[in-house]
Image (tube, rainbow over all chains, first blue to last red):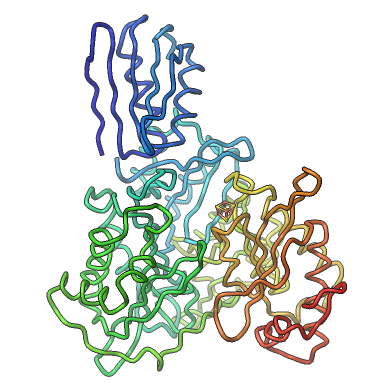
Amino acid sequence: MKVEVCEVGLGRYKLEILGLPCPYPTLYTIKTLEEIREGEVLEVIFDNQPSTKTIQEAVIERGHEVLSVERLNEALWRIVIKKTSSRK
Amino acid sequence: MGKYALGYEQGNGSTYFLRIKIVAGILKIDQARIIAELSQKYGRDYLEVTTRQDIQLHWIKDEDAPSIFSKLEEAGLCTDMCGQYYPKAGYGDVRNIVTCPLTGIQPHEIIETSSIVKKAVEMFTGRKEYLDLPRKFKIGVSSCPINCIKPEVNDLALVAVESEHGLGFTPLVGGSLGFPPSLAQPLNVFVPLDEVLEFIRAVVEVYRDHGLRDRKATARFKWLIREVGLNMVKELIQEKMSKSFQYLDCSKISLEWGEHNIISQEKDPRLYSLMVPTFTGILNVNQFKKIIEIAERYSDEIRVSPAQKLVLVHIPEDELMKVKEELKTLGLDSEQPSIKIRTRACPSDFCGKSFESSKKRATTLLDYLINKFGKDLEKLDVSISISGCPNSCSQHIVSDIGLQSTTISKNGVSIPCFNLYVRGRESKISKLLIRNIPSEQVSLVIEDILRKFMNSGLTDFHEFADRLLEGDFIHEGRSM
Ligand code: SF4
C-alpha cells in the first residue's frame, strides 16, 4: 500500500496510489486537487483498474481537465489532470 | 484503511456497492439500524443478503464513502476489500468467514463457532500483512452436521468433529466455484479446538507466502494445491505451526450439506428461530426496518444466513404465528414451497458481467412454476441457483438445478441464453445438461424437468439427475 504526493516540477505534482481499491484512488485525487492551485497539473499513478474510469468522471464532474490517460504497463496507469476549477 | 472499501460495478446505474461483513452471521440490532439508515440515505432503500452472510448496498457514491465508513466503524462493522479488479495477482483479502447462522442456539451443534469466527476476523481485518494475498481467500467454519455453509466451496473449511482425539475440527482445503470449479479436499487431520485460530492463520500465511502470483487466473489456493499437492500443503502448514497433526480419517465423517428448517427449535426448547424468506436475498428498507422491530421484541440480534436469508431468534412458541403473520404482511410469507425458499441468484444486474438479471429471472421462473404446479410444487425439495457468469456467485455449480447466463450470436445479434446444470449423486459439482437454452424457454425446460422428476417415481433428485445425464429422458427432441 502506498499513497505519496510529491512535486515533480514547477506547478506539477505526482500522486502515487498503489494497492488501494475503490474509492481511495478517486478520493485521494480529489483531495490532492483541492490542495494545489488552479492551472497546476496533477499526475496520478495507480494500479486499481476501475479508477481509470472513476477518476476521470470525478475530475470532469468537478470542472477540471483530463490531459491524458495512459496505461504504463499491465497493471499501472497514469492520468494527467489540469486543475481548472476551484469547485469541490 | 484496510478495513473499508467499495466494490466497483457497472449495472443498474450503480458504480459502487458496499459489501458489509456480518461477522459470524450475527447482526446486532443497533448495527442493523445503521445499515437501514445507510440504505435509506445512500442506497436507494435497497438491501441484499449474500451467500457469504454479507449485507450489500448499491448506488453508493465515492464522495459519500468517508461518512459511510466512519458510520460503519462506529457500529463495529467492516467490509470486504473488493480488490478483484487488479489485473494481476495480489491484494487479495480474507472474505467474510461463513458459519452456521444458528450457532450457539441450536441444540445439535458440535461446537459453538461464533467466538472462533469473531477472533479469526479480528486476526485478519485491517492487518497489512494479510491484505496482499495472491487473491481473495474464503473460509467457512461448520458448527453442526447439517453443514449449511457447504464447507467444500471454501478455500479453507473447518468442519466440527467430536473424535477420538477430542473436540475440534477437521480441515478441507482448496475449494472454489469459479471456473474450473473444484471442491475443497480433506487433509485428514484433526485440529484441536484450542489450536484452531493458529491453524487458520497458518493456512492463510501458507497461501500468502507460497500461492502462485504469476497470473491472476491461477492465483487461487486451489491452484497451489494442484501445483504442489495436498501433502506438501499439509507439510507447509505443519512447518508454520511447528507441529505435526494427528491423523483423522475424514471418510467416516458426514460432509453432506443440508439446510435449516424455516422454523427451528432452539437449545432452550421454549424458543424458536424463524427464517425470513427474503427471496434471492432482496429486501427493501421498509421491510428491513420492520424486521428489526420484530426482532428486538425477542432478542438484541438478527442472524444472517448463507442461504441469502435473515433469521429471527428467541421467539417463544406462542408468538410464532403472530410473527409469521407480520412477515406475511411485509410480503415475506414463510409458508412457501421449499423450492422457492431454496432458490438463490447472484446480483448480475449490478455487476455488469451478464446480459440477464439473475434475480429477475429467478422471480419469473418461480412465478411460472407456482402457477403451473400449484400445490404440487410443495412436494419438490430441489434447489435452484442462477448465476450471470461462470464465477458462480449464486453457487449454481453445486445446486440441484443450476442456470448460468450466457449468449450466442445469431446473424450478428447476441441472443441471451442459459446453460443448465444438474447435480447427480457422484459429485457435488453439477454437470452440464443442456447448453444455450434461449432465455424465454428456460421456465418451460425446468417445468419439463420437474414434471419428469415427479412422474419418475424417484424421490432423490440427484438420482433422477443421473438418469437425465445418461439420456434417459427426452425434451423437445433433445436427449436429456
Ligand atoms: S456470477 Fe458473474 S454475473 Fe453473477 S455476480 Fe458473480 S461475477 Fe457477476
